[in-house]
Amino acid sequence: MNDIFKMFKIDLAESQRISQLDNEPHNHDFEELLIGKSGQLEHFIDFKSQVMDAPFVSFIAQGKVHRVRPLARDGKCDIWAIRFKSEFIADTVFQLYSTYHDKANICLKTDECFDRLNVICEIIFQEYNQPNPDLSVIRQLLSSLFTIIESERKKLNLNNDESKKIQSNTFKNFLKLLDEHFMEAKDVNFYAEKLFMSTRNLNLICQDILHQSVSEIIETRKLTEAKNLLITTDKTIAEIGYELGFNEKTYFTHAFKKKSGFTPSEYRKEMAKIIS
Image: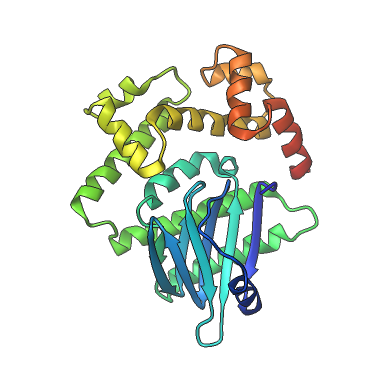
């Protein structure tokens, strides 16, 4: 996906069109949020399949192997589909990974909470379809959307399995530490010691959840923030690299291009075109 943010509706006609396509399990280079108002969703993710009746919420993290089939129920299908690059809400997306890594789908009730979600989606959609949409407005509304969803998750008391809960809490604590220290020169040992565990066990948990080592996640967090700074500030490439712990501009440029396919300056130009 080239756009930093994209939003569309899946109605009855679109669900029928999708059902005609070859739809093999796949992954993608963006985050995706599906909010079902009516109809059903058949979702294969984390190597298991689930069919949900609306209302529901489903979050698919970048890189997750999955397959979705929107389906009609009682002759209706109405699903919001929101796609965005991780750097669009860089300060939130890593928390989303910890929240949804083992529970991508949430079945909701038709109540005031879901009505609020739908109202926010309507406002985002209206702004998105303006001739010159304000991405800062969309970013704030999207963050609010996830805040309400997280509040509802807590009420539903999901993830009761004790071993998964321990692993999930450890991962959440790691990401909390990472958000506090990722701009410093901290290695895997620092995070393992803070969590009172071995580097091996921390790596095993991270591999199980994100399929990345601790070092890879640290670098991903740095580069996600680099993308955010390239878009939202006028700082030079060298300043951004140094701020994120890359002492050499050439190494920062190499790492950034390896991860994104662009050099930092190319990425800044491309995003400027999109946002303008």
